[in-house]
Amino acid sequence: MREKSTWWRGAFLTLYLVFAILPLYWMLNMSFKTNTEIVSTLTLWPRDFTFEHYRTIFTDPAWYSGYINSLIYVVINTVVSLAVALPAAYAFSRYRFIGDKHVFFWLLTNRMTPPAVFLLPFFQLYSSFGLMDTHLAVALAHLVFNVPLAVWILEGFMSGVPREIDETAYVDGYSFPRFFLTIFLPLIKSGVGVAAFFCFMFSWVELLLARTLTSVNAKPIVATMTRTVSASGMDWGVLAAAGVLTIVPGGIVIWFVRHYIAKGFAMGRV
Image 1 (cartoon, one colour):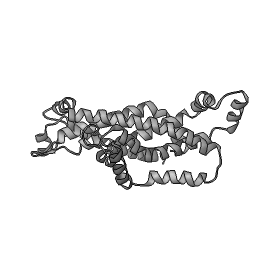
Image 2: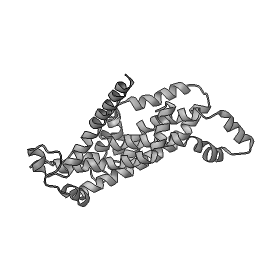
Image 3: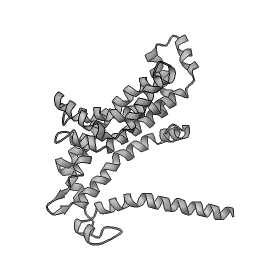
Image 4: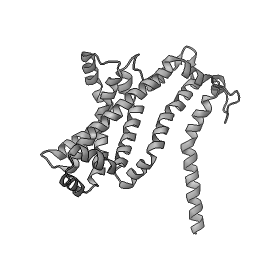
């Protein structure tokens, strides 16, 4: 009976992995095929292997600039989100003040709200201040949903650190900045890694705000990928190659914070 149960678990895990990996493999497979082969036949691997689609992305400014633009505003957003969320999360975890729970809930409602709700206010505000089609515009807009998420994650990690550590540091003569940077921050580095990962990923994949607030100079790759239709039809090969390259930054981030993510799930805050 035990061997049968183990067999079923192994079979289920195998089917799940195939189900999860198949779309990624199929997109990678399409990226090395010609458009004629993609639309005409169903093949498990390319018959006419080609790097032409990747060459198009790396040589066409309209494509590779999209990746650069996305990385710029995503990095800005992640850094600013953490810089704002760290002191805010510390305040929520260590102090009690009038309306603290209401403010915390209000922050979370911003994360629950669809981006389309903020689209018109951001568009009018940025048009008035001349911020349209800039990396800063998208980075600031994404703070609306990334800061609440980072505060929520970091507050859980900070609440797990005993208050006695703060009091001991103050007794030893530590100033708050020195205590926070040298003692407290290393204790919650797992939470910082988890928060940075989610801020990066949510900003990287967001489409509506990034597409509406940019046009040429700061147009992200997610917006460029929606404009692959031409007179000859959809350029499936280039779109698949762009999709493969879009996964690479996220994969790199996951590689560096994989241990922190595991700890975040273990602590039950993620």
